[in-house]
Length: 372
Length: 267
Ligand SMILES: Nc1ncnc2c1ncn2[C@@H]1O[C@H](COP(=O)(O)OP(=O)(O)O)[C@@H](O)[C@H]1O
Ligand code: SF4
Ligand SMILES: [Mg+2]
Image (spheres, chains in turn purple, red):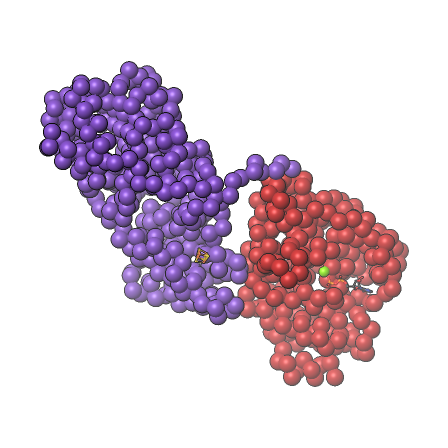
C-alpha cells in the first residue's frame, strides 16, 4: 500500500480531460464528435474544433436528463448525425454528468447501430492530469481497431512524458501561475538581429505540439530569412520535430505540410528531432545534438514547448523562447530563459490550415530587419 | 475444481433488509465448503456483505483507500475469509452525502484493473444494495461483469413488489434472470405465492429458505451459519441453494407482472 506523492492542487483554469479527448478524436480523424452531456460543456474548444473541420454536437442533457438518464437522447443524436453528416467515423465523449449518473455509451451505440465505427470515450473532467482524456480515447480507438497496439504503446509513453514535462516546468508545476504576455517582441527581435549582425552563431529549435507548428515554424523561417539578408545564413542551425513518418495520420500530415513549406522557402532543416507528437521527448534529442555538435553556439531560439529542452545543454547560450501559453512565461524565466515571448491566440489560427501561418514574432522580426 | 470454464458471476437483488447479504455470505461459504474458489464483492456503502465471513471483522474498503489517495494493490482490498472465500468491500460515502452510485462504478473499475482474482474463481457474488435506485447500482451488470442475476424475496407484498420492479429493471437493461429465491418471513402460503410469482414472470423458484433464529444468532457472533452451525437444518438449505446456483444454466428475460396481478397473487 503506497500513498501517492502529495500532488499539488492547481487552482488556475486548465483544459479538461474532456477537451483532451475531443482533440484526440480529431487526431484520429473522426468526422463527428458527440459530447454526451449538458449544453455548453467544453464550448470554447468544441467551437475551435469545428474550425478544424470536424463536426461537434451535444446531447444537451438538461435537468430531466440528469435525473432520468440520457440514453434516448444519445441514440437519437447518433441517428441524426449519421443522416446529417454522413460520417465515416464517429466519436462519443462522456462528460461529468453522464459519467456520474452511469450512462452506458456502448448501450446507445448498440441500439442506434450506425454502420460506421464509433469510438466511445468514457471520460469526465475530474482528472488532475488532462492527458487521461487522451489515454481513454486511444484505449477506445485501440479496442475498435482504429489504431495498432504499437501506436498505442508509443502514444502512452509520450503521454506520460508530456505529463512529466508539464509537472516539471510547465502549467502543472505550481499551484497557481499568473498568465503573462511575456517580453516585448520588438525588443527581442532587435536583440536577435543584433546577435546575427555580430556574427554570432545560433540554433533554432522548433519543438511544437502538433498543429501549433504551423505558426511556430514561421519563426524558424523569419530567423533564417534575416540571417540570409545579413549574409550569415551559415551561422544558423535548424532543428524541428517534423518527422512525417511518426504519429497518427493527421499529425503526419501536419509534419509533411510544414516540411514542404520549409523546402519551398529554401529553409534547410539540419536535424529532424522527432514527430509532431513527440514534443515531450524531442527536447532531449535536441539537447544531445547540441552537446555533441553545437555546445559552443551563442544563442538559441526555441519555439513550441521550449521547457522540454534540458537546460544543461543550453545554459551557456542566450535563450529566446516562444510559447503560446501565457502561464508558461514564469516557469521558463525561472528555468533561466533570457527572453520569453508569448504568441497570444496562436492555436485558433493554426486550426484548419495546411500551410505555415505568419506569427506575430516572425512579423516583428521582419519589420525590425527592414527598419535597420 | 473449475479448470477452463469462465467463472460464474452472479448478483443477488431484492428489497433492502430482505436477506441478500446473509444469503450471499452463506452461499459463498457453502460453495467454498464444496471446494469451489469463491469471491464475494460487497457493493453496499454499508460494507456489511463480508462481515460474517471474516469473524465479525471489517475490512478496508476500496473507496476508503481511493479517498485517501492510496495507490491500491490487490492485497490492500482483497481479503481471505472463511474457507478461503475472497472478500472485497466497495464502501461508499456517508448516507446523504456525495454519490454512492458513482462510487460503485469507480470502485469496480478499480478492482478490475488491480486484481485478476475474479478470473480465477468458480463463483463471484456481487452483493448489491436494496433496490436499483440509479445507474451505479447496475454497474456490475452494465460493465459486463455479472452474468447471472437472482432475485430474493419473501411472500410479503412489499418485497414482492420490489422484486417485480427489479425484474422490470433487469429486462430494461437486457439482463436475463436466472432464478427467484424465497427467504421466508413466515407469512401465510409463502412458498406457494413466491413459487407462483416465479412461474408467472417466466422463471423458477430455486430455493425456499426458512426463517430461523439461528441465522441471527450466528450473525450476532460474526459468523455465517455454515461456519458456526454447519449441522443445522438451514445449513443444508444453503448447501442445496449453492449447488443449485452452481449447476444452473437457465435464464430468462423476466416478464414483470402488472401491479393488479401482483396484488391478486398475495391475496
Ligand atoms: N432466513 C433467515 N432467517 C432469519 N433471519 C434472517 C434470514 N435471512 C436474513 N435474516 C436476517 O435479516 C437481517 C437482514 O438481512 P441482510 O442480509 O442484511 O439483508 P439485505 O442484505 O437484503 O439488506 C439480518 O439480520 C439477517 O440475519
Ligand atoms: S462540469 Fe463537467 S459536464 Fe459540466 S460543463 Fe463542466 S466539464 Fe462539462
Ligand atoms: Mg445487504
